[in-house]
Image (tube, rainbow, N blue to C red; front, side, top):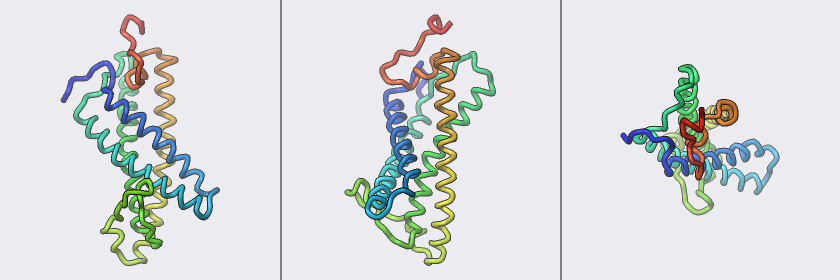
Length: 196
């Protein structure tokens, strides 16, 4: 384990902002499916699947990196409950970044339509065999269950993102500490003398 520094590593920062952009794009796509039909809906769904699987792969890399590289310490002025909440929110986001794409993959694998997934219209992505090989009634039931779970997890993600962004802005503009600068590229974290 590396010792914590006063900011996240370049790898962690790039992964953080790349995954964040992909998640926001995918949430937007998911929320606009109802207004699309025909080929427009098909293209949006294929892009949604591609982005979701990219989030899954990058999140596994990010989680591995996080487990082997310590995060910068939280400010000493933060009360214990706030530190606990920050940690819980971060690990909750990690769980959602893996769980949502997995449930999406399960939906596609269970779907009776058997539409293949091509990552970015190029790379074939397999169905989950243990789901795809089930009898059709079981697949239909699983598609519905995973669909509901996928949607609930998406709304949970929106809630946690609002909390996460709100907390970052609170640290920047109310607490005026160094928390946000830990993850911003090209920004030097504040020193203790600059904060006090």
